[in-house]
Length: 136
Length: 286
Image (tube, rainbow over all chains, first blue to last red; front, side):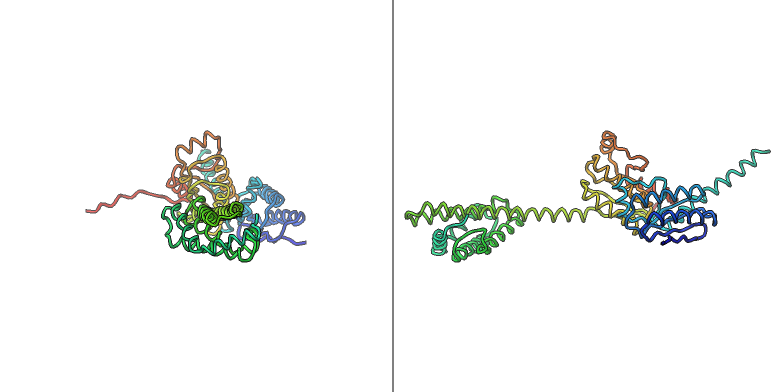
């Protein structure tokens, strides 16, 4: 059975889907990804679908599931590289890929995750001085 | 509706015997109907071509416009109507050039006299009618292909996607947005987003004369498709009347940013991008 490779780049896991997804490959990918997120402690997952000519409801659901799993494990998911034809088809079909963030390419996706992560850290930093000032 | 062999023979004989007279008279009638919009010499050449084609068909035997032997005649007729359609003549101005032959034939048949005069004239004029109809049809065909060509050209020239800033592209929509154009705009915009990797697009509808539910639907689809790809769309150039129509029709733009002018939209995008615009002291010369 074919497996989708998962690459680690810094704090981000990169999944580039380059084959037609079957039920089995999808389930395998979800398992592998969950394991890798826990093992590496990454905060971002980028799914690259540049090579996909067709995104149907099955692939759409798989992407949603992966996003939900990552969310539970405290990792942000960004889908990147969707082709114009794919986007038009999804809109015509009425599939909106709820709860999934998207970016034009891997670079933008990495920026997006970095920004989201930085925001989170900022909040934590802001909280600390407040807590200190409140105690005395 | 073909002429019989004898009738064809008589028609060909009549036309070839009085060669010079037929073309001259025919040209005269056509010239007066077109009121000098084509030169006499040009009309004469066209009439001569037709005349030659009819005689040539008659020489081969039966004159039947739908038969293979009349291919030359049909070509001459289509040539004439194509030319007239491109020069902007009306359909009746074109077909009248053919019907003028009837007047010429009436004179000739009357002069020749004889017992066959009436049936001959009826048969001849049927042929002329048929030729007229054929001309009319090829005239319409030419016009239709002209219109189709123009529609295609319109589709090509009216949807530019321009880059306004690093990472910001804009589509100034001009003219009525039907499904075909909306599809072209959508595809071109999304492709440009990918090619330039711009995360922001501004759709400017200043040039759209009216926004109905269908146009709004097309714009919304484009925005949603761009979002799926990871880009954000802003709609700008909404004129006061259009804003009223949108509200009256109950069209919901949801969380899509809308701005009154392209300048506002650009400022909005720049702010999102973290670009600051500041007014400097104007320079005073003197």
